[in-house]
Length: 244
Image (cartoon, rainbow, N blue to C red; front, side, top):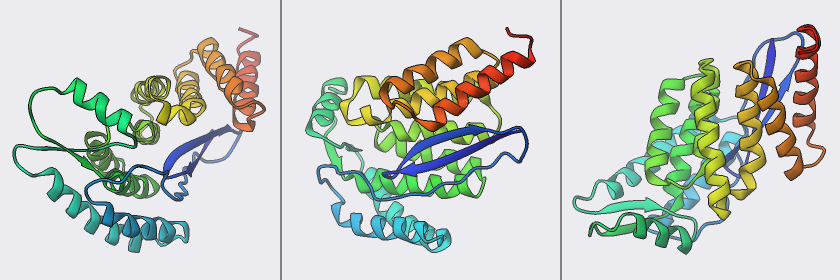
């Protein structure tokens, strides 16, 4: 069976996939500090989110979840104000882009990224516990709050992988890939998204396209051991199938 190892870096999901001939299908998450973002409404919540992340790193997901749920309640209140939108951005560029795309007269509040990070971290914890339904709910919140965050979509891909919904995973990784190519703030996740697409394509039996995506990821991250191991796995599958 295939072994799927997921390593989370920068409070975003930095995937590492690996196949083995034997052994269980496994998933782990390891959250670390959030990436920098310009401050917004709710910036006072950042310390609580950071402390919760540190607790998760120490293996105390239960205590981290309690604190994150409290943060989420504050964020929900900001987002629930009638007649206004509260959305998280990392940069002024994203803020202006969103304004241009949603020019309907509704006032827009720049919600601090702490809220999106809290929702994402709650999703990571749910994925760790293999509670994909709960993870999807938190990811829906995160995506609604921070529509330009590619790691929300890669984490959704992980949840779909847990369900063995390869087409759902593929769609999520492809959406993430689009974001990494259109938003410089997410460009650092492009190789990751390419590997996610490749992983899903292997499961769907499209080995040529899977190989292409892994090779593209290596152009961005040369000698990445995960991509190299996946390419070896693809070759093994071809050999078993008679060299197709």
